Image (cartoon, rainbow, N blue to C red; front, side):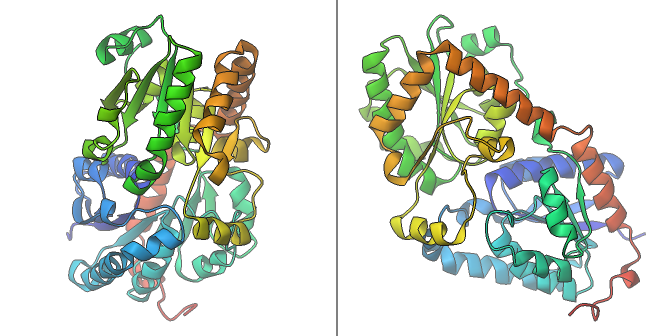
Length: 390
């Protein structure tokens, strides 16, 4: 019998991690399933054959994409050309919508069923993408319950399985063990700096975070700082700034959740890290900064009240958001100082984070997603009519 094969496409670090968990769950159902495609370190460790690495594509901001457009188009072309050679039985597309929806058409036309895992944020911008997905995608798995009616209204087969992070965001060490392993003082307040998982984000935010840390240290001399190195991000990215700083700072690799768990406050780029920190109940200051033109275009296209995932899920601002010019050292340090100096604010933020966990929790999220994927993998290919909907 022919070995089943899955094309998996994850263009960013968070998608790479989610994809690896899903891949592991599918392999528990059937260890013989093969995986290939676009991903990063997490998927590679799980055994996926990488045709392309996501680090060459990952950027934040609309205009920032232009600098990597040639590489993005070459990767897209390469994956399309791989389809007739590999002939996968299923394609699992993870987030990364501008890339994946262009690939989806070619996949669909070859009669390969498509599972979209981590759906595009159509509730924030470009809702027209739902109509595209209705044509080409067999099944959509969403992580937020409020997404379901948006897709069903357009006839998309959609299912909310719960958010996998609720089950996977867990420290591996006790706080005592983490402090000892990281060489940090458990009696001193700890601030984690999370400038993002992409090099472009780090280069834009890290100098600002370091300057904010200097200001904070002047107000609270006992502070110590730590940076959890994002998966797939080379430590060399930090080399230009860290030797020049005198603040007490450690870089920790591979222990992001343990770093978050021992921290009294997170200063973080917007993105998955805000949700991970929220699940751990951590107070945070959220920042967002892209090129001025990207921000201007985004303001015209994006229609949400908040940029931080914890605030979006809560439906209210439970963590401060500093955007563009407001994401400066003085403002970041000011918000951080207010939180660190006020136990009442920290307690209130932590309690609000618990509500987010409750909203997103549903038992067995990854296992349910794996069962859906495996069902599509073994679906009669003849039921996937290429002529239909084209």
